[in-house]
Length: 281
Image (cartoon, rainbow, N blue to C red):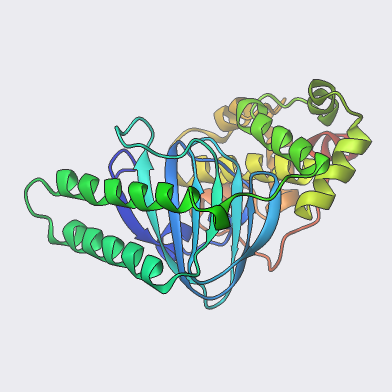
């Protein structure tokens, strides 16, 4: 099913059997509403890293950087909404912990009805699905308006981290060094690194690197573009450097990743930025 259409997926389907699809920092061209029904995990969203669990609703607007570390027992649904769909949706990322049982049941019922509509394949299914998603949008905006869901005031560090993550989608393909991001934000690279690490548990270079790896793996596995073209698109000076970069970060070459022989590792590798990796090569 194309991501240019409304659709409901499970979190397992969203991950596609590979932890990197959700576990690496990335952004998408569509909006995503996530409803967690079971289990615990961690989410990076809007410049903060926090816990996520049952009856949590997460809205990720198109172009917002996020990642989710799914716990072993974590279950839920993800509603994919193409950007430009004529639905009233929030402009900013939101993470809501819904405690009211009736409110929880209300959203669960709407999602269940939408899933039935999607699975039956009846005429005008997308129209019906849009109506269900419109109700989800109303539910979401009603919850955001509740006093209990007013966001806590961000720290200066969280605000800086948010601004940095907002820059990533626009610049991660440029190959720009960390000094560029720090300069645009009016801080030193050292300060940016320490601040992002405190807010997210990862350095600024980690997040930038993750976004590049996510894009590279997605392009390698879903397109026929030659590795050298992907390398150029992502700001690498040469295909050889791109190969060394991917080998270092994933344990596999671009050709192995494309063939599905990903040589998965456990955990997140501690890796340097592209600039440092280039210096070491």
